[in-house]
Image (cartoon, rainbow, N blue to C red; front, top):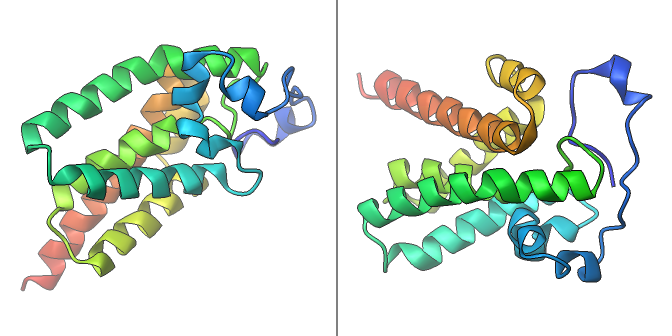
Amino acid sequence: MHPKTSTHTANQSNAKKPSQRLTVRFLFSHPAHILSLGLGSGLSPIMPGTLGTLLGWVSFVALDRYLTPGHWVALICLGFLIGIPACAYTAKALNMSDPSAVNWDEMVAFWLILLFIMPASFGVQLAAFLIFRFFDMVKPPPIRYFDRHVKGGFGIMLDDIIAALCTLLTFAIWVRLTSF
């Protein structure tokens, strides 16, 4: 398992190895792991953040017919607040500051995006997915600032919320420019 990509090249050679192996046993060893590892999607050895975002997308589409926008706001806020200690607990258990396997942050952030763009066509949802993944993986400013300077569970959750806000800003600009 590798830590989330970072522009900190000086610390990459000193990166800590996880103290735990990512297994189904680890996943079910504590409720915080189940949540922070995206209900198990974080166990994927390939692109767990992208898989977590996909799970966020699928779960939003599945639940949206039952939840009002007010319910979504409450769920996103609750998901963010519960995600802080859960992600911190799992990161500490793995002896890493922001493990790539921790992908609850991507799920909650993508719910926020979908809340503001829905109802939308599949193509628009896909564009939101791709733009969000770009912001989350590349971490351009201001996301990079928060990724580097805000640590712990709050930092894990916050940089993805900032990436979601950058995605929504991109959409707002796109809508404004194409509506002339």
